[in-house]
Amino acid sequence: KAAEIIKARLAEKETGRLWCQLGDATDDLQCYHKALEITKNKSARAFKSLGVYHYFRKEYDVCINFFQQSLECSRFQLDVLLRLGFACLEIEKWEVASQAYRSYCSLESDNFESWNNLAKCYIMLNQKERAWRVLQEAVRCDFDNWKVWDNVMSISTDLGAFDESIRAYNRILDIKQTHSDDQVLNILTSAVINGIINSSGENSEKHRSELKKLLARLTVSQPRDPGPWYNYGTLLIHNEDLSQEELVKGCQSLQKCLACFTGKKGWDKEAEICIKVLSCSREIIGNIMKVEASQQLQLANSARLTLTSSLKMIEKSQTSLTTGDIVESIKDEHLQTKQALHSMLDLIAELKS
Image (cartoon, rainbow, N blue to C red; front, side):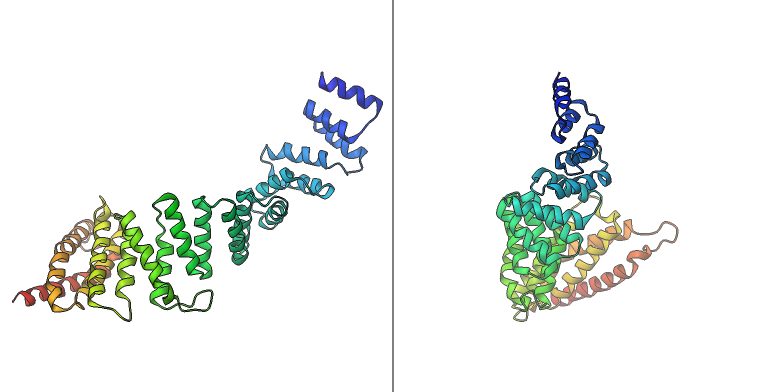
C-alpha cells in the first residue's frame, strides 16, 4: 500500500526523495539509481541507501564508494561516517577509516568506541603519538572501560611514557582486580634497571618506586602468576644501593616465581616453560651466592628442594627416547643450571661443616 501511494505521488511529480522512499518500500535498487539520475548524482539519501544495501551484505569494497559519495553530497551524516569507518576497518583501509572516524569525532565527541577505533587506525598507520592522544579522549568518554586503558598502557609503553603505562596498569586493576601483561611488565622492569631514557628525556630509574608498588600489588592480587614475582624479584636485586634485605627479598620473590611455574600440571612437557624454569633457577642460585653467610644457608636450603626436583622433572620429560640425551633445544640451559646447582649444593655442605 505504501508503494502504491508513493507511485501515485511520483506520477504527479518525480523527486529524488520519493524514488528513495519507493526503493525503501520495494527493496528495488533501481529506484535509488533513478533518484540519482533525476538529481544528477546529488542525492545523499540515494548513495547512502545503496551503501547500506551492500554494507549489510558485507560487500565492503562496494559500500565504501557509495558512502563516500553520499558524504560528498552531505557531510553531516553520523550514521554514514560510522558505517564507512567500520567497513574500512574490516578490509584494513586504515587511512580512509581514520578520516571517517576523525570526522565523526569532530561532530560527536562523546563516543568512546569511535575514539578507540580512530586510535586503532593510527596504530596501524604507525602514528603512535597521535593514537596516544586520541586514546586520552576515549578514556575521558569512558573512564571505567578497562580495554581502553589497556590500549593506553600498550601505546604508552611503546612510546616510553612509562609513568603513563604504570598509571594505566593501576587503573585496569582498579576496574577488574587482576590483569596479566608480562610483556609490559618486562619492558618496564628492563627500562628501570637499565636506566633507559623515557619519553620525557629522563632516566627511567625515577619510576622505580611506582613500579615497585605496582608489582607488589600484582603479587598480592595474582599470587599464582609467575610474571609479577619474576619482575618484582629482578627489580629488587638490580639496584645500585642494594641492601642485604632487598637481596634476600629478591631471592624469595624469584623462588615464588619458580613455584608458580612448577605448580602447573604438565609444565615439564613444554620446552618453552622448561627454559624459563632453568633460567629462573640459575638467577636464584646466582643471587643466593651473593647473600651474606648469616642468611645464605637458610636461603640455599629453602631453595634446594624445589631446584633439585625441578631439574629432575625436566630431565625425565625432556630426554630423547632415541638418544637418551636431553633434547637439543634446552641442552645448554640444562647443563648450565645443573652446574650452578652443584655449586650451590657444595656451598651448603661447606656452610654446614
